[in-house]
Length: 176
Image (tube, rainbow, N blue to C red; front, side, top):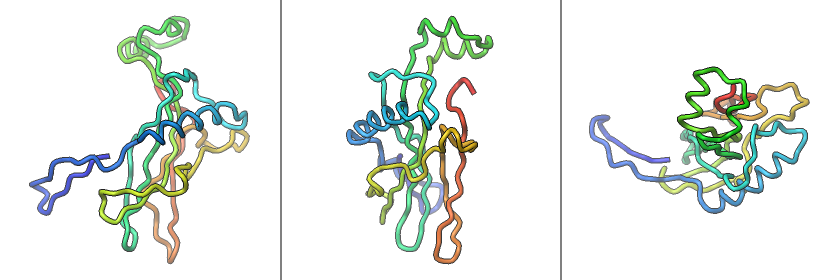
């Protein structure tokens, strides 16, 4: 996540890196992906290639609340990265468009969950909740739609409460 500021919306500071996935996130990603795949109540990603496990900050919505900023980094836990020449694509029933796209870009699969962080200056972010998902995916037997992709944005302030609404999807990636 980079930050660039302006006082007139015409002249901007150089973008500055203020938040990223670090080494601890990579360690947590390996554990989280393994635990997720082993849990039969959760939807597993399409593929699992342990040597490509990875954590990335996919996006981060943020908002001011009282005297702090609250951030909702959307963590992407990649469970596989398949190269464009992966042999398995040949045996899949893919449209010509998807076949061309995969032969050019390869394929990634995984799942998204929002974490929680806060800052007083938008530059130094403190991780909250032990870097665990703020909102996790629903169980397969729940009938819910948020089993593989969960994303939260700015909440609604309701009295002294923050009401978080979120988006969820059953699938991630090119095969949806």
